[in-house]
Image 1 (cartoon, each protein chain N blue to C red):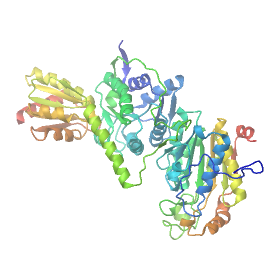
Image 2 (cartoon, helix red, strand yellow):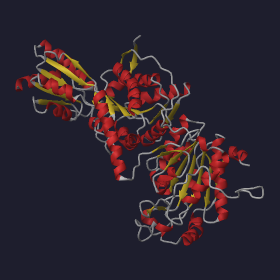
Image 3 (cartoon, helix red, strand yellow):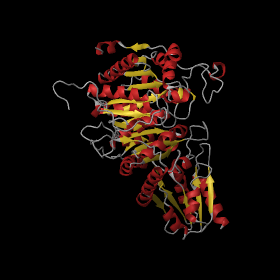
Image 4 (spheres, rainbow over the protein chains, first blue to last red):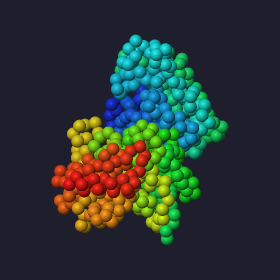
Length: 257
Length: 350
């Protein structure tokens, strides 16, 4: 019971359902889901938000959010979100995509959604691996990193280089807000939430395309304990994928705080 | 009042009048005028138009807009329709209404930009992965292209299904006098499944994933029941001089025009031949064709391909009478005199 001497300091977000998440122990998808739900709650937009789900570990994201949701084909979420947003411009439309979905099979769709300045928000979860299919090499797999389809480690001479998505998209004039964050410790989790909130605010102000790339861990497919996986994000991923703001359009600067 | 319209533009205008709210497409010959026409008209009417980065993206934009409840369409030509099969399969699996137009050209591969009917299999047998078939309507004139396009939206919405217009380069490019249907207003509807934001109602999910095999089986049973319903209600065809016919030409779309001229020529020679023209390619008019096969001596199938619809004709005819084939490929169009020569051969062979 809450009385006048007590206050709520921690609660379950309204925008999450009470479904049990099916993510592996130590996976950071759950943290990112919660951050998005908190932002949707704080902005009061749950009843006008439509999510577009990816193919990958987050394929069942629609079970966890108490918002309308569509399930896209692999990589096509930005195209689907475009279709929804163009016919319902006053709704808030976001895609949630992993690195295989967004940076391999869906490269054209994300590039052109950004180039059009499509007024949608993309949450891009980069864990450098194909999680759901069992740990194959992703477009963001680090040089030398072992996966089930690069068993000797990614050889850049043969398999090419990982793609730095935030840096690439930031080059497009249509992109308004492109940043990279990480969820490997509480301080960075808070910064990630702030960026997600800004990204949704960009859309609320009709200010164009927004994307938050979030470095995430995959203990199961990296073959590491949850703690060691977070350490891997900090020590191995961040040097290749530096955190920061890659594009903050002038219009966005006036929106934020 | 009849006006002179180019096929592609008549289809576009008919779609507008049917209440088209969103169009997503990608340029490809010979359907470009359709996209160009809508690129001009849609913004004026404050309706959605996007020239996508590919046919893959275009069909997924269509999928998104359909999920949001909009009356939506795309158009393309054969190679582009191949690229759209992924999205079409998801659309079938999600049961959202979508109309697509295929202004068919010569294939396989890059082929050419001349008229063809080489996508009969792809259009009518599913096209993408899994068990579904779009409703397919094949116009034989610009007038009919406009009418069937208007109808396509009603059928798509009635069955929450895909409707494909199987046109070809002839229909898309030629000009004919057309009386267009009057425009109808766009009314906002909530049919209980659209994604519009969960305001004052439980959330809605549109998806084509059913991980549990039994659940996916049950969904497919439901989908097939819908197909049976479509087969019961939506068979369309046209007949020409069939009453006293000894021989029947079966042809659809622009091949049927050459066939109809051949019927006239043959009648002048005293050969009693008629034309059977399927308008709905799925559902195919098997029953009517079976009936006809019981009272004629032989059939000739004319197509602008290597013989695709002929498989459905043979299913209907069940070897009751001989079925001969005349096909032109590569974008060649059959001439009435060529078809007449085939009719004579058919007569001789009996």
